[in-house]
Length: 448
Ligand code: S3P
Image (cartoon, rainbow, N blue to C red):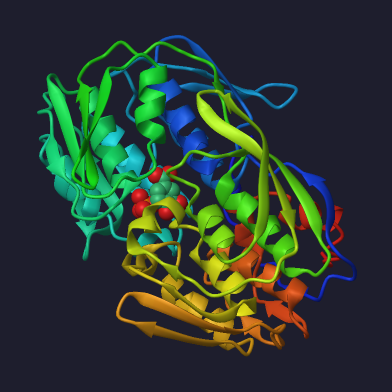
């Protein structure tokens, strides 16, 4: 299975759900964990089997890149994937440019791996990814001895001259970013000595967990409100099977739809509940959402559980800035929920939203404003003024090559009075293949 060269434009008009949403669903595998599983398996000795891998465009780009670097990546009958790793430091120089499509995670984590492999690579991406900042990884990775040449403003395409004589990096993250943390740790794998990353606020720790799973020595200490992560360089990484849980960031969409469509009751099964990913669930519960968690268990080293969601009246809340990293991808759909709540929701500290697949702060404001919602930005905070009544809808939403905006707009349309037109839903394929069909299995009645 390979990523297609480009995604054909797919507009959609989302109309009010004909009846309450009902049923049980399982959303696709976690995007962050899927990228990491393919990359770490490619650096390990032996064959790793991955079950539940997200087969979205972003992850397929990572699979293609690992193949171009010499790993043997195969989709088996039955849907699991195998990766025959090359071993640390053994990746082959790719013959062509690596195209990471729409995926910031793929580009930034791979830059970490490539920095400490002695070869020359060039990386590019689609128009969205080519606008996103790479300086945040170029700066720390240059400390290893690797050299980078990027377009103005640190943009892709990026040329990477990896080093065979790497220095271990010590770095304090200037922004709360799991991608930057992971890039530094991945570079540290092929550098002698100890790599140290200090993060001012904890961010998702899938890299730390999976590195340990593959046999690396990683320690984590709390330091004030943040953490210090230490990795011993040049470990022997051994192939280990990986079970990918369902993505809480994808579960967010049927979840919010079920809260907003009156009378709905939906079960979302086996959702990843890593505490560094569940800020949305905490926030929605504070807003009055009926979300119960059942069957809590640990699968493949990550906590998972079933979410039972019942339509609920919501009230506005103040979302603290320290919570942002644990729900960074969920603000567009939280803003949709807030539009239906009574009172104002203030979401604090959203500067990082400006550098996602689109400027998500501006795009979320435009999404809501086009559909009759009063919304403001004050500094880095977004304020959504809900009235407690259904919102008018009827707007056209520009999704700006951003999958999460497209899905948020569709959720809005399912609960608004008039249809919400979405200019292009094609990018939903990057993270949530089968989204429309899954929503329709709950009774959403979406065309297309
Ligand atoms: C991710 C980290 C987050 C998130 C992205 C996935 C990861 O990005 O927005 O969707 O897998 O590490 P940042 O590290 O830029 O915050």
